Length: 264
Ligand code: SF4
Image (tube, rainbow, N blue to C red; front, top):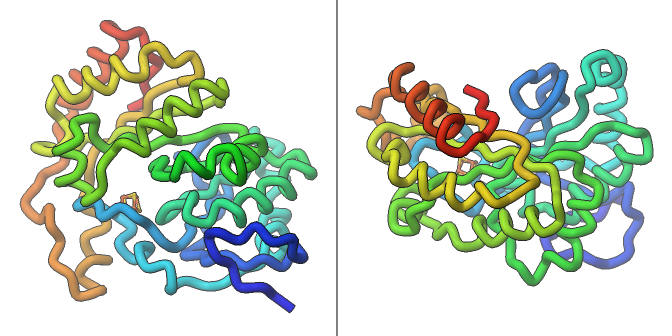
């Protein structure tokens, strides 16, 4: 009998039957980690990013319930693509850490089959969970994609309605664990494209030896229709995408001044 999932669910249940709230499943992504990825979008997010392109993932009560075993079965259909491309499975959201126990169980199963695992997260987790479920999950995670939205605390709050302290603490935790990590940064004109803010982020991650590269993502309004479909006004209606010149300027700064590998 399936057991409904809750975030703080540490009881020893029949693990294969733990249920997670899944928004959607996408096969064949090449932008969510190395190689060809099977991407699992989970439901629920604590952030309220004004540019969110997955507005329909916010509500934890929505989505479809999948057991760990069902997701593993889905994943197994694509293993030949993983083998050929050095790909694997990426869990994202919404925010994957809201269902950390579920993802932990899933990644454990995938690792038993030598499938590469990647966690895309905003890093907003209570440090109290680090030594328990989170470290267990990280032990079974091959690559973390950590989204840093903005280094300036006030601007972060204005952009996401959440402060960035937990995300930055999580980044330090990943560095202490020497966990292979890529930083993802969305460049939004007027919100996250100030070079001083980006320098602050670069100064913060520069000493971290676990950072494989920085991925710069240009803001786009492709998720606007999802806000409208749900009956909400899209907050960044008049904000354009950053210019190619601006993106190149940021990339060059991070490469030349800091020596990061930067993907645009
Ligand atoms: S963290 Fe991601 S899913 Fe959550 S609101 Fe921000 S962009 Fe949307």
